[in-house]
Image (cartoon, rainbow, N blue to C red; front, side, top):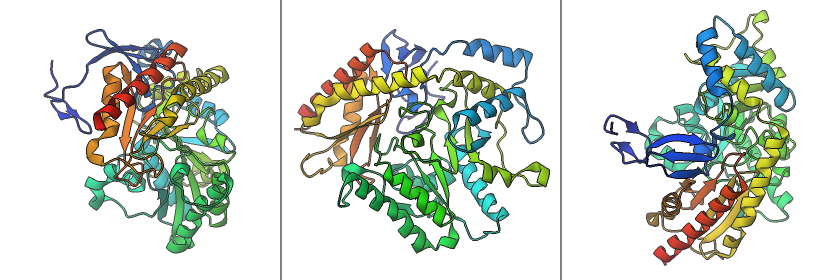
Length: 447
């Protein structure tokens, strides 16, 4: 077997020379040669519960042999689907009680966009078709989700295909230029949304979309809680639906079950995925509040004309329902403790000549690299500092999540660390040691 018949994503392409992973357990990936790699990125912040959740294999076998793997949710329902939706209603904050299930994070964002459009139509607001999001964000790879995404590198080659929606600055305190206390700066940053709504025309703006804690574009950047309180006020005033993109931040990743719970604000819609099944089966969802759900009550003759073939399939639903039982308070507390441990162990990098910022929320950490710590000047992109650090760490047995463009869309290097919540203390120490050593090696290379 070889890679010639596989079209790999991103910079790998056809015939790429990539490590072959044969198995995985806990927080470890096991390569073909037997080497163990610490999965300090949880794949792409997916494997929140690690690679050894008990009983998943037996559950899949039982569902396929004794139940059903796929039915069309436009025509049928199933026990696993209803059970999963009920569990989520109990877990999600406020009146977010009704879920529409699809298969990927990108699909949830596109689904939420169409759902918001239909919601406003049902309310007679035909002009509300504009979506506002933020720069340095990532919401998905489909055309709709990529139109909302504020990651320049991911957008650039496909820009002619994208809808030209407005974007406001990110919630990125390290590079904010607002005046005052952290709370005052947060409020000023949030008020960028109000300005954008006024510029677009309030009667045309349908929704605002944001990650509670920034993901791969500005890893672990997050504002003072006043930011989302002001966002909530603005959305309420202008009849704008607030969509929280919890695809990466949901299910214990940020120290709470959902990222928005860190800020004491309940959105109108949450899009979820990744940790929903902890990577065991493709599934994601759009969770809506009672007001929005009421507009699509079939008993009133209303429906949502949208869906995907594998949406809400009983096999993935059964797996997700099983996985949710393992998101206990103890596991989430353990994830927070491991995040605190990793942040403390990375503390020595705070004074490093190429480390500008170290950010943490729960077990989600970002390290941003700069050419000058005093001015926050980014490195020349040609140096590919982010990739160098990633490669050095991988060579030493730690898989991280690298990225670029955090400063202005083109410049800015960083890595993210988001190991499984169940990661052992020794592995956390090893991640910190390897990343610190890798940063030092790269510093020697570029100076």
